[in-house]
Length: 572
Image 1 (cartoon, helix red, strand yellow):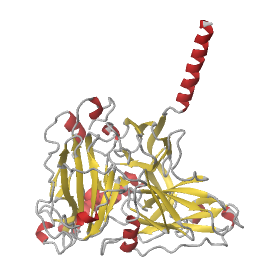
Image 2 (cartoon, rainbow, N blue to C red; image 1 turned 180 degrees about the vertical axis):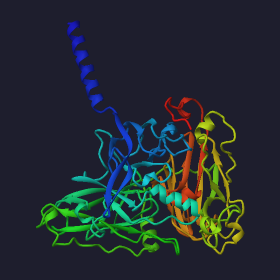
Image 3 (tube, rainbow, N blue to C red; image 1 turned 90 degrees about the horizontal axis):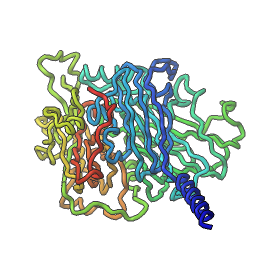
Image 4 (cartoon, one colour; image 1 turned 90 degrees about the vertical axis):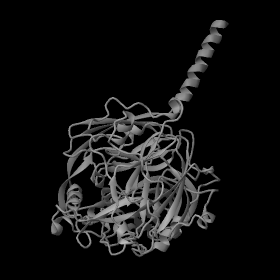
């Protein structure tokens, strides 16, 4: 009898372990080969840097709780790193990816394996190169489904489609940024925007490859919209269809309905769309939101086609019936952006950090450097009135180190790579959104970080300035999500603007679109040790120095400390 009970017990253990392994978190292994690939767009074939010859790169799908192990081999001629945009990277800062911040680049011929676990995040994120301007073509979606056995907090959609908005140049993007760095002027604007790598019907030589997004009458589908453009916030809409926003930056939001989205580069928005219109073909369309004054920008429109499967003329044989084109907001329609931004709430009451330990105030904006004496004024100082464009936070224009990454220098106590004296508030207070004295237009270059004690509760006011021009800046913080507790226009007033703080159900994001000539206030708890870049996600601005980094110290014990560096971490 005892023998049988042992067998039954053993069977029960086997069954229990089978059940638990069915629900166990998985490890996903991927190989990324960075390589040059010929790609034809806008009537022209050019070699672009891709992952595995794909443009856009592969979509990675995981569940909340899963681990990713991505082996990257660099067969291209440029240094490269990969950033997993929006992934919290708890204690795994070595896998975050920004070049010379958390790692030295993967040199041509080199390799590095990124290992990290998704913890408590569900929705849409993405990955992209974080070295020079390689992310123009090196990017893809990172989709995080609920844990096995869990479900969405909304009705399960019939199908899901990633919609990745990108930006295309009829040139090598590395040449574009190098030329701008040489001249000190603005980089050439892009030649097209793309949806899933394709410009769409409104461009030359493009309509045969326009992306088709299928839908059927009665279906509800999930569109996972990602702005992977280099330098442009974008409006997005679908002709004759309403969009119900259910998530952003891999956090759920209280659902709200809109006809138009605005995404700054780096931001993601999950929307439900219902097949409740006449069976036909409808354009999805995206074009620029341009808040900077008198600045050149790409004013073209990218499209894909929402196609009802039961539409009278299916797929490619109906060039005669043009899809319906939706109206888009005016390029400078800040009112629509503000209304959209103010609609975001967390689904329920959240625990917003209070009893603030670190009360920070960072200006974000552009600047102009005087022409250095050894520069040729006509060819190397092509900014306004013979200057060179620059950008800064709190008057510090961020410069990346070149011999060590900041995290490696911190971990190994290497002096001379960075300093920890980034100012907690602007060195000089002024009328940030008014007529700023020219004496404040030239920032100081430096590799300065701001040190945070583990567990400190942080409030950060991000204040746009009108230096050169006010502009909407998508500010991204690596390694963290944060609550956006308020936004407004003009100069932030600590006496009166605190009344606007939402401390009940503010949205949780990883990238905040700081309003043009305005401000945003974010809060987070510094519970992830490491070095975390915070920068404008308009790549032209990070190139000019619109960045800083938080150095979050280790707490007590292993679980509050960053892991040891991996053995294959690239050397500089």
